[in-house]
Image 1 (cartoon, one colour):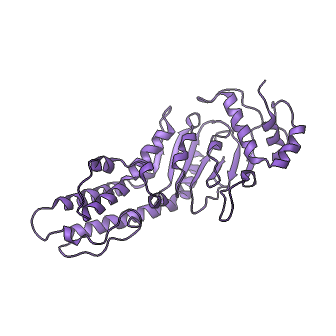
Image 2 (cartoon, helix red, strand yellow):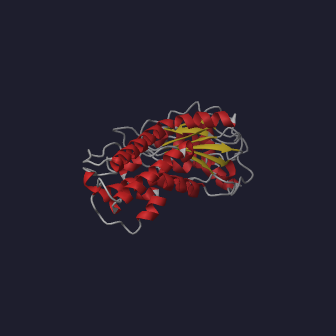
Image 3 (tube, helix red, strand yellow):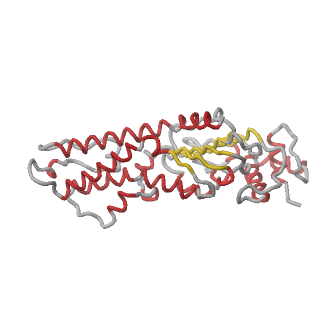
Length: 327
């Protein structure tokens, strides 16, 4: 079951990867052609050129005889980076978080590795212009972190498949990566807290967690974060649709659909999250998903304790979570 779910989730992320890989192949082949040619060259084009490489002509850099110029060496090094990333295949887009390790750190390292492609494009562009080598160019070719990426680069961001233990699923710090076309897919093993992704719900972000991939309908564009929780019996499942064109983004409750809730309140810690923190996740889900009128109506009738949530109506259960206070 876990393996099949990973394959399904991987397929959902495939479109962003194909676009990124196509850009890698195109840029690598163009640089190879430039390095092998002895005449003037056509303009470097493709997706990396749009906002990543501003190149009009590389021909003046390449001499028909003799040793490589310093500029040619920089172009060659940039192409080597692209080839290295291509040779990684799907491993470039997969993250395996070691037990007890930081999810944020693992994701940041993955994007730092992917960002080397953009850094290589920058280096080639500077070499074309005859600009001096920046002092940090070698470091950026080794790792180019997400916070340096331009809007065009973030729009070309490939999706990541992240495998992690449920007890290590701390994701609130990942909000810095939810921009452009960034898509993060979590394959979660074992039990986890009820609503680990709730802190990442934003008006412009698709957020969903489920025990299978069937409900997912990840948009073609825009940031998204999803989690498949096949072994998490106490987890809630929900889908948040981002605000569309012309929508202000207010009223998250109108775009957030809750499919299921845990039957009882969390009573024991999971990993580093206490039972109180887990209950707060559920209360946050309730606060975001209940409309203002329903919240007022249901709060008066909500039970004072949360030993069970038996109502079949999601609004009733959510109102109960919202009114719950630890004894």
